[in-house]
Image (tube, rainbow, N blue to C red; front, side):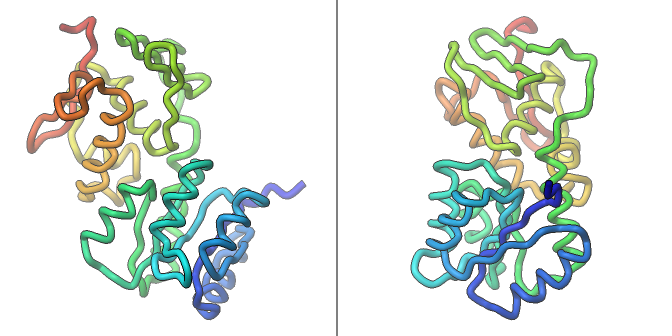
Length: 234
């Protein structure tokens, strides 16, 4: 049985794919390749990977559309690759469901570090002294099954969204600093990446708040961090 972590690289540059394979395979990863978006989507359906490296500039449908279509049926972590360093591209990728972002050209050590950091996020949270199920009014979080229900209805979260909600909810009533959340959810190397946190807080609010523009559960503390408000603490 193959227990290697499977990574799909989606890029129309054969040289980049050869470079990534040459460096990831010796590190114990299995590497699959796709040269366009449609092939990538089909490959994900047939051989689900553990992580996807997805270039934005692709022939046919671009990486943004591929990411959006993948998020319709899979929560597999996605790292967007691009030659552009513009903030707008970074935010757009995150808003479409990407987990991370890497600008070309990148070093192999940086790539390996990002892959490890993203894969860390999908691991089960560390054992805590929290009860197996947390209940906040009509919101229920099953920490064992990693399941979230709002008024009895399942809420589908990506691994990063769940990890962020897990940190906030298990620290309900306490303001968590921006840097603290970034370190615990994304990894210590992301302590200053506030845009990641803003985007994913917005995701969570859209899924668990009745009025995301006027949140009652996830409260902002400008310049400091975020507070998960428990009804029992009112």
